[in-house]
Image 1 (cartoon, rainbow, N blue to C red):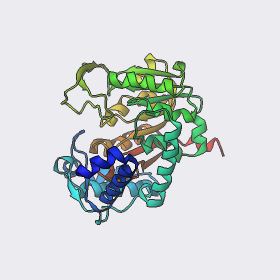
Image 2 (image 1 turned 120 degrees about the vertical axis):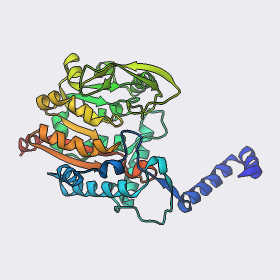
Image 3 (image 1 turned 60 degrees about the vertical axis):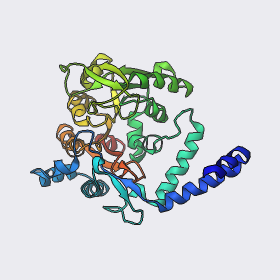
Image 4 (image 1 turned 180 degrees about the vertical axis):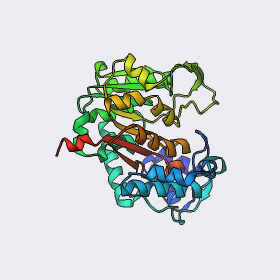
Length: 352
């Protein structure tokens, strides 16, 4: 607002913030915004999909899914092929229709409902971040969408939180009554915050355990050297940085489950592009304990196309769903927060 803005801010701060709010709201309505597809966490969707055998991969991904899941797959495929990769991102007019159409979570009425509940949740939380994700604090990594019998199946049992960040999932999932949550995180900076945030949200130390490790398909890999950004995007697939360097042991989930004597009934995994390696290293755990699962599959095409067929061949008599758990479409939210949910069919049979 220039010089008049400085004067207003100093002498009439209420009026200043009211006017700047109006100006920003107007800009958000009329100015173009960015939409792009992540290509920095394991490869470009467009390059992957230009390879041979894609028709079969798509068929395998959609096999056995319900109508909404299959529709979500079709929309995401159209979007990742239509919009530019991150390295080529550009501004897009708001007047243009969204490629693939609007998903249920992106409809205006649903967005309003989600944002209203998130606003109420913010007031109740002791969480320092101004931004809390609807995928975590509204959808609870998809648990909100599942039948009540599934929620009872996991209540008072062990949870695994792979990609724990600063404890947002551990705080949110407390609503589902875990006995103990085992949170796996690579960043030492995030682990420090995790413990602080759980304490201020009154979650006792005997109800969680933080495991400093990176998840892999096996246990014979050398430790990884990473820059500890302390961000939610910390990944084996990001090689550059300017922060404190750390060394992280790479372990399979099967190894950690045995070491810490975990009996998981719910496993959430959002590990920035390494979901296929994760499920390969969790095969024994998944078969033995038949947990409810929520796995992020949006970071790269390998996650999106290959995690679900692998799990479907591994886990017999499972229901699989694919849902987008974010209502936005700006930037890479056009395809972000797409989650694969799974649960054993016997949960529902036993309750009928």
